[in-house]
Image (cartoon, rainbow, N blue to C red; front, side):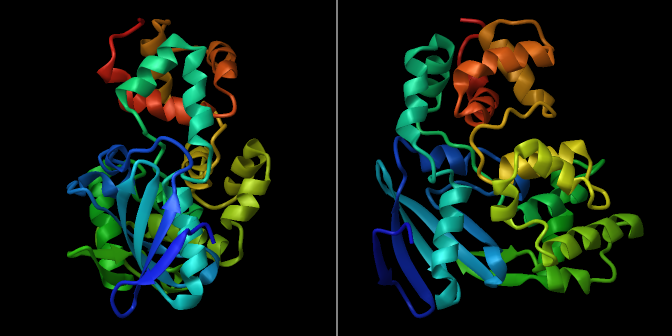
Length: 305
């Protein structure tokens, strides 16, 4: 376990403290706005409810920052799932990488230094798992994020698991087995439900296991995911980059971060693949993090300075 201390908070819950491994701001993550969490109001607590990696059921977690480099997790989950939940939250919050090494990149890149200073402690918040990220991609295909959130919440409320997390009710998505049994979702056409069933079946078979995908070359992992019905290049890239916890994959398929990078560096937009790849060489081993930072904090600094 990553945890430093463990204590029982109330029946059914456990409090765990984990290090953030460098500069960290939970407020930046909590107000980032990604996936279905974009509408979650911020009151200092990051509330999560998700399917636990490895078939360990579900978890509800309240995340609080209790020190500059320490988080407190109040976890509701099966006791045997605790280690998996703690590891998963550390990945979701990008606390499983060296934040000091990331900050040090700014010493040699003035633009990156200004971006880091504009959003101190920002790490990329991730989807809970490749499974949940893939379902999200299908729910938002040709829909707005808000419309996708409505569908996601409908599925979770009708077929998922309810948690009360720090005084608010959250609904976790059903696990793959339960999702496969869903025969209709109001507002979701039959073909899209069939594609979501294909994702659930892939997860059931282990194809979406985070350790499996993380052990592959990222391009290979994306190609592997594209064998799932309905998952194309954009979706496969999102799953690999924003769910597996990889810090050094440049999201070439994602145009908004590329445009944000071009603006921050005062370069022509759109950047060519070659120019983008060349510029990003200086960001290794945190190319994912820099792309996310540019998109999140680019409007906070003057363009091209």
